[in-house]
Image (cartoon, rainbow, N blue to C red; front, side, top):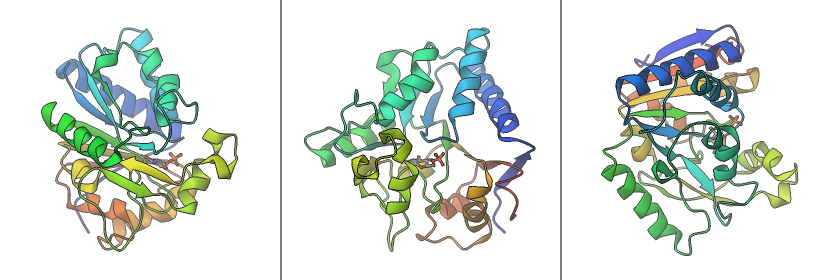
Length: 245
Ligand code: GLP
């Protein structure tokens, strides 16, 4: 078995509280922390907790820098279904991050390839990601790196699977036809270059993916299994997500 550090919490709320405290601690140790952030339902309690800590003076984002993992292709930053809008609602508008320190893939870029290259350069210029927080797709994806015969190393354009589009339909009033068919995502190497990675996964719906990620072979069919190759990775689970491991 690979050397992935697994932490199991009784509830999703307990995992979120502990991770928020961990992030706050990292921020106070290194105020210029470069954070990689996910969207999705899983990190919502984490973002709520970070906002609460910030309100109590216990999480200071003034000098922090963020890079989000992915964005839908074809959506502008102010589209309500965009991940950028999601992040504003759940975190950015509630803490003291500077707008100029928030980095996002521009889903509406006229040249998506150039946009992906720009993003990888911006991450490198910021000195790389110190702490990358990840969620886990029901199909084992991380970011928008979908199961495939091959995975892209650099930030790239992706065709979204039906499973992923369904999982994201809530952002589009549950109208599947409105969920974009493609996205832009940090690539596998972009993610794996982070100095520390914490994958947060909760709920019984993720138990099978968690099992395949941790116990299965490293395979492009389960992009999250590549985390087994990282030297400083933690997987934080609630009991339900850990039920098969
Ligand atoms: C989405 C995002 C991922 C996210 C994952 C899980 O499609 N692109 O970055 O981690 O799916 O989402 P959720 O937390 O809602 O289950």
